[in-house]
Structure formats: C-alpha cells, structure tokens
Image (cartoon, rainbow, N blue to C red):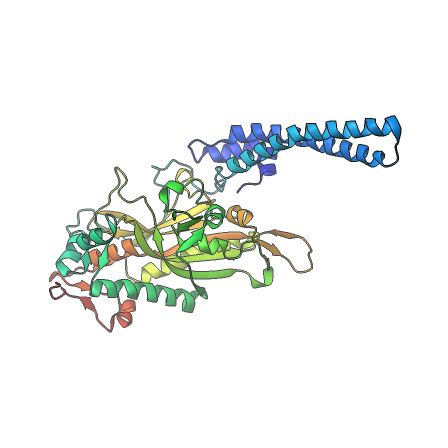
Length: 426
C-alpha cells in the first residue's frame, strides 16, 4: 500500500499520478478521515497524559484534595471512554480505505486508459491478419485432445479436460518451463499450496479490490489461489532479509482459479478464458535500487521462453489506466493467434516496488546498518499455459491436420515431434 504519510505530504503528486489510472478512488474521503483521526488522536493523547498526571497525584493527596483528584480521574476516564472507540472506528476506516488506493504509476509508464494500446517495444514478426488457420478449439477437437463437454459435467462451465497428447503437452510445457528458469536463469523452485489465507490475499493486493473475481472457501478465511503471486508475495512476510541474499528469485508452477470467465462481452471461446488455468510464475525480491534492472531482466527471462517455443510475439508496455492494482510499471508479452487473428497475452511482468512488501512487512537490512527498509517485489508469468497452448496448436498446425511440437518440448513428449489424432476415446 501507499504510506499514509506520503499521501498526506505529497497530495498533489499522488492526485496527479492516480488520475492517470482513471476510475473512482476514495482519496478525498481518506484525507478527510485522516485529518479527523489526527485531531482526535491529539485529544486522546492529551486526555491520557492528563489522567496519568492526576493519578500520580492521588497517592500523595488526602482529604478533599484526594477526593477531587479521584473525581477528576473518573471524569477523564469517562471522556476517554467516549473518544477512544471513535478513534478506533476512524482508524479502522482509514486502514480500509488505504487498501483501496492502488500503486502510483511510474512516471515512465505510458499514459492512457484501459483501451489505450500502450507502447509496443518489440515485435518478433509481422503476422498476417488474414490468416485462415482454424481456431485452436477446432484443431483440438479434430485431434481428440481436448474435452469441454465432459469437463462441464465434472465442474461446470469454464473448465476443460486434456486427453492423451493434450495432457502430455500440458505436462511437458510445465516441466520444461520450470527446468528452463531454474537451469538457465538461476531461479529456485517452490511448490505452493492451492489455498491461501485472507491475509496473504490482502497483502498481495488481491483483496478487497478483487474479491468478486476469486473463490472464497466457505466457513474459513481461506481462498483458492487466483495466482501464485499471492503465495510468493507472502513467502517472506514479516521477515527482514540480508541484502547479501538478494535478489531472491523464485519460480513456481500453480493452478490459478478465477471467476472472471464468462463475463458479459468477453471472448470466452475454448481455452482463451477459463476458470482454472495453469501457469509458471516468476517472483523476485530485490533492494529498491535494483528493482528496475530486475524488471527488465524478468521481461527478458519470460521472452526467452516464447522464443524457444518459436512463437511470434510482441512486448507491449501497459498504459497507466490498465496497470495491475499493485504495479508501478508493467509489460505484457503477447503471442500471435492466427486462429483468432489477434495477439494473446501469455505473460505479464510487473514491478510493484514496495506496494506489496509494505503490506506484508518484507524488509531488508544493509551491512553495517541497524535500520531496516522495505524491499521491492516483482512478479511475472512465464508463461500462462492456456493461451500458450492455443498458440502452439494454431501456429504448429500442418496441412495434414497434425501439429508440430517445438524442439525444446520433444524430450518431454517421449521424443515425439508432432501430435496426431488420438485413437477414438470411449
């Protein structure tokens, strides 16, 4: 979150940067209540100090003076009994409103609303929008590797079941992408819980803003994880890290669960938007001065995956109006879908600076310094599997209906170089 003191002391800057995000934010109400809170806090502290002074005098007083001091103590206690609950109420409301204020966009982020195209920094090729490649769900149907019908019987709409070579390709992607980041880029692998606490969701900035997009577990304060970022950002919660151990680089495979699939007006065909999806998540914890170098490095690490898969892609910097809630700057990596004739996001790389670490209490300490400061955190997908799977099918389709498997995946596919139609399933 943003520090309340920073908001108060740099109000003009905060208003200017938040305005580039657009949307309604409770900034005016927050500042009004903060002013009320500080006034009331001063009054409460004065009453507490006065009661303490009067109480100290009772032991040395006697007679009428003692009675007067006791009466004054009772009066001050009564006044505090009125003021303290009101102070607590206002403080709780200030804390709640602070959670609804997003990260300030970095000055270098391109300004624009959610419909703004952002800034394309790189494109690996010029795809033809007139491609006649069938969409991925038709390719998968002809190959017999994807079953939506039975998945809906098992779990309802927005879910899928891979069959045969489809399941093997999904597993191959997961294993290769983990191995690639560990072996090539020095990441340390974690295997994470599918459930996360309400505290972890809040610290990762998924609550309260996105509660409606996530699955709460009944009768508990746990949630199905909407992204591995939640668990990874909570991994060092409450800890102070030695800067000699930084950057801390973690990679994890996890299933993600979100309610957003099927939203009105959203393209939901096939695997492009589903309620459960697999992805490989990168996460870095860095010193503040190193986070933007790490930001560029993480982008290149995600790009390397796409290049090894031999997909046409582009790097687009996200405009301020479409930034993630916790992000100061963000790159989206998009692959070309010839079946849809458009770019599909398969990776999002964000620098959250100290927004999440301040919530989670993740600090660093420099050699020779007794003072701790907040670390910076970065997250990136490398990659999201549903849309990567889509691109592999559509870009790898051959004239005979088979699909070429990228060379890097072939050792994970029992040496197979292509996917052929499955023999009939029951």
